[in-house]
Image 1 (cartoon, helix red, strand yellow):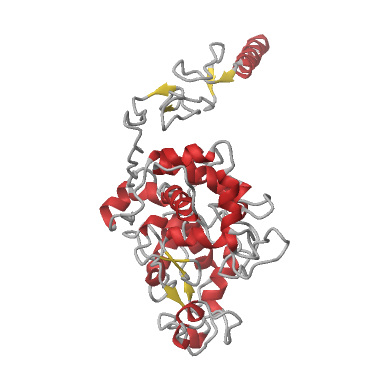
Image 2 (image 1 turned 30 degrees about the vertical axis):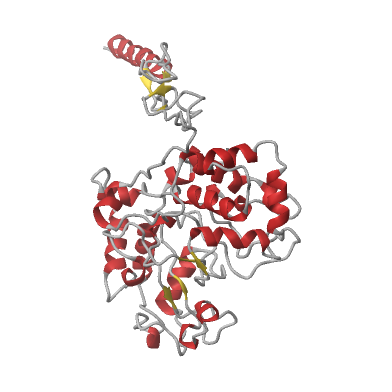
Length: 406
């Protein structure tokens, strides 16, 4: 009997060691990193990306390994090639079409030029800053400080807003205070702002006109090599209209692709419940993939104002203290929060609406619980609300190769 037990112990040891010795790796021959010697698939398989693989095309994707027949080429006439925005399914199902100005139709050449300009420091007075300096793709085109620092080391007074889904701002009012009427006008100001790029348009245009590449790129995009500020901001606006975020976990849930965790599902219920979170009035619901009303509200931050926000733009004292509702998409990347970046964490934001509301003459009527300091959420409801809010973050957006520096 003793000999019999020893036999099985030895056999088990051998079997265990055999199992441990199995090599892990990618076992799918269709993958790029197929390992013929691997016996256990460890989930590391990398598959070829489909796209246009022709470097001579307008939409060449250097990361694509398989050509999927989508390459687009210049017209034989030399005219710019029209660019059609790819509308996400939830957008097409639930909201109005994007705003594309009739005097700035999108073209492949215009989008490519706008992308190059967005990341090029040539527009700043000393060649040290670009649009991307304050609008980092990895931060959902925002930045991780409360205020931007311009080329002269001067600090601004408003937090840089994230940039995405801008084509669906039907009121065409941009910035926290709504001072720019349209994406093109939004792109016009920073170049000459003395605490941002601190340049003159004449100097910026001279730099572009004398550049070895830009005159030809403008000719391809706008059929003229005579550059002016209007064409510069039109190109940047075309690129910015392509910045679409639509693939968060919650988007996938709405498309039936994934399930929410219990905390995320309860957080969404709190968000939609007027007697608890009551967030949806300003930030939308499952039928509004923008997660903002793009309107201006006094959300109870201060009793008196050091910045009147919309009131300084309209001149109407009833608008004092009102700022644009930001989208709740991509909150994982866009801290700090609020127009002045006063809240470093989502917990601080939720605490503000829960017990930190402050009354003032222009407080929004939607802040119904201001007399009680806020909606007074329990600790567990706060945690679940945060879980839901983070489910609106879109990794694919911040890592989209089309949105990185060319």
